[in-house]
Length: 126
View 1 (cartoon, one colour):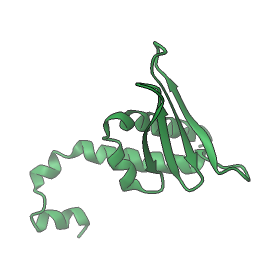
View 2 (cartoon, rainbow, N blue to C red; view 1 turned 60 degrees about the vertical axis):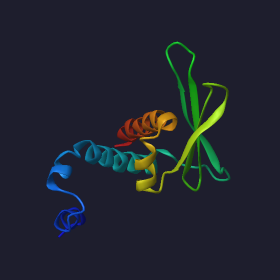
View 3 (cartoon, rainbow, N blue to C red; view 1 turned 45 degrees about the horizontal axis):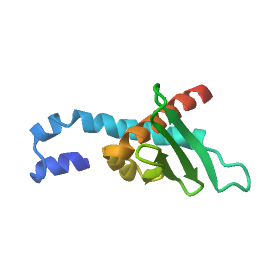
């Protein structure tokens, strides 16, 4: 029996809860695909310990965000909204960590955009 079936059998979640969790399953599938894509798209040249890997400017030119990834897999994002500052950080080697950060207010939007870009780039390598 798999883990989800065990959760249902021991009463931790109900079948109704599971049926209402389609968006969580889709988000988990997105994270899995995105992190597999990152393995293909984020390559470190010899001697570099971090890469500039993300940049976004909205159509009005008011909101700008950018991100870096370190060779240990930590993605850090910054933005200019309200002054330049870090919006969040996650470990691209940890599926759960990335999954949970997708729902954070300020960081989640840029994280999802960054991961979507990595999926699209990886398709070019296929």
